[in-house]
Length: 218
Image (cartoon, rainbow, N blue to C red; front, side, top):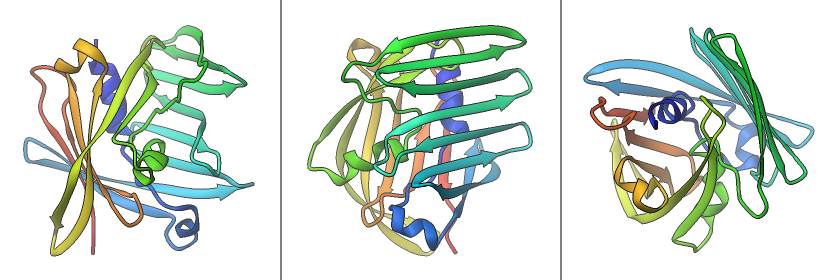
C-alpha cells in the first residue's frame, strides 16, 4: 500500500533554498545508497515570474514541482515509462489526472484547510522556519490518487559530518497519522541556516531495503 508512495518520495528528494539563494546556486547533487550500491542525481531550480520551478531528471523519469514564492505547492508533474500524472491546485480543489501503464485515471480532492505537500523539502520550508514542533499535511498517492494524512515532527538539532564538513541540522521525522504511523517513517535532516535537505533515511515499506540520500559537498 505504501510502496508506491515511498518510491515517489525517494525519486524526488530535493534541496530546499531560500529564494534569494536561487540566484547563487541553481542545482545541487545528491547520492542514494541502497545496500552499498550508490547512484547520484542532480536537481535544477529556477525562478520564473516569481514561481519556483524544481526539476529532476533521471535516465528513466522526470518530475517538476511548481511553487509560489511563499513555498506553497501549486502544481506537480511526473512522467516515466509506465506512469505519468499531473496534480494541480484549482482554488480549493486538488485535481489529479494521469495514466498508469496506459490506463487513464483522474480524481480530485477538496482541500479545505489542508496543506498539500508532495515532497519533503520545499514543502517543509515554512515549518522549518517556524517555532512549531508539529506540522500536519496531506500527500497524494500517485498510484491511485488517494489522499494520505501525514505528520512531520521536529526531533531536535544535530551536528552532522558530511565528507569533511560539519553541518548544524534540524531533524524531522515524517509518518502517516494515527495508527498507520507504525508502518513507515522517514528521518530527515535539514541545514538550520538555509533549510536545504542534508540527509534522508527511509525505505519503501516493511521488509524493503533502507535508502540513504546524502547531499554531495565539495
